[in-house]
Image 1 (cartoon, rainbow, N blue to C red):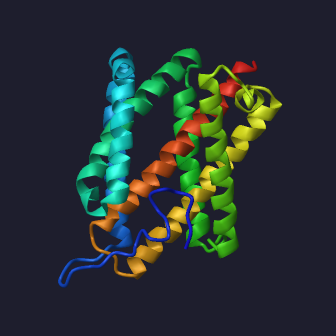
Image 2: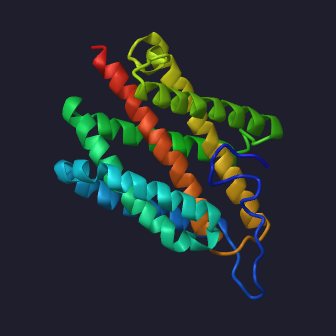
Amino acid sequence: MRSANPALNKNTFRVQRMAGEASMTIDGTVNKTALGLILLMTTAIFSWNNPEIALSLFWPITILTFILLLITIFNKKAAPITVPIYCLAEGVVLGGISAMANSIFPGIANQAIAITFGILAALLFLYKSRLIAATENFRLGVFSATLGVFFIYIFNMILGLFGVELFGSLFGNGLTGILFSVFVIGIASMNLVLDFDFIEHGAENGAPKYMEWYATFGLMVTLIWLYIEILNLLMKLRSRR
């Protein structure tokens, strides 16, 4: 199995379950994902109402989330501790970003949230109905596209440090920038399908119980990416008016 999500790769569920230890279930993962979303929304609401605090904490929290991401990926047993903290920290960042965007384009944050959960619900329905399947070719295509987008972002960031704008049109509000955002949103959405597939395989293979939190982590990473890309697209569209 292959996934573009750094939290869910081919070695994700290659962990041994101790004798007598409870195993991972789909329901358990769903419950923990719901809890993770509640934690994220709690701190997001706080930073939304206190944008000046969120702004001052942006870089420390961003560094913290990156550290938590690395700890969780390399020590899956720590997921029950690191993932709830990760959700709380990401909420602060997302709440601040959303508040700033909403101050420029009123109502845009609610639109982005609605579209994000709409895509999540639609893809979950399509996956459970077997109308879309994570075949090997599907995985390979999504993995390659995600890797390409990742390299464009990193390369653009590095060039930006030297004042070079090689991919300026991709990040602008022109037709090219809008089409690129739509493409990235499509890739992020397809990663949700891979996340569903990996979670299902983990439950079928009897992964340890703590892997429910790890699977939640993988889903949260994809959902946060999807939300940010949708918010970015909506800002591009609104700025053209």
